Length: 213
Image (cartoon, rainbow, N blue to C red; front, side, top):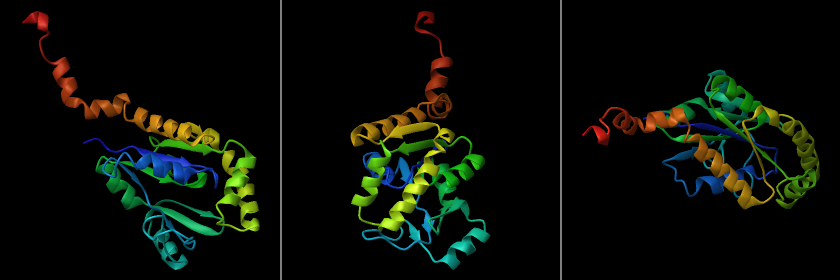
C-alpha cells in the first residue's frame, strides 16, 4: 500500500481556509483523506468541540509534549501555542490515507524541512478589504484582535512564494474546485500511480501482444 500524501494548507486568518477544507473533505470520506487535529493552548470559541476542532490543552501540558518531541511542528500565534502530533500524522500516512495539515507558515516551513515531498497550498483572500470584512462578520474577535490579525496577515502573505499552489478564495465554488483539482492531480503523479497501479503495469508490460497470438 502506498503512503498517503501530506497536504499543508495555510492562509491568513479570515481567508476561509477551514470552511474550504471542510467542504473539500466531506464528499471524499474519512477513509481516503483525513484532517489532522492540532493541539492548542488557546481557549475554545463558541461552537467548537474538544478533539474535533482542536485538542485543547493547558500551557503546561503543551510544553511537556513539546519537550518530549511529540510535535511534528509547533508555533506560537497571537500568544497561544499550536502543535501537530507527529504520531498521528505518521500513522495516518502509513495507512495510505491522505492527510491535511491546517497550519500557519511557520509550521509549514518546519514540516517542509522534515517532509519535503509534502504538497503545500496557500489560500489567498481576493483583497485586504474582504479579509477585514470576513474577520469582522464572523464575530469571534474584538477590534484589537482583528487589527492584530490584519497586521499578521501581511506577514503571512509574504510567504506565499514558498508554497506549491495558490488558490484565491473569491468565489467559494471556484476555490473549492481548485482545491479538488490539486488533490486529484497529486494522486495521479507517476510515482503514486506506479505504486497503486503496480499490478496493471506489470500485466501491460509482461505479456504477449494480441498480434503475437
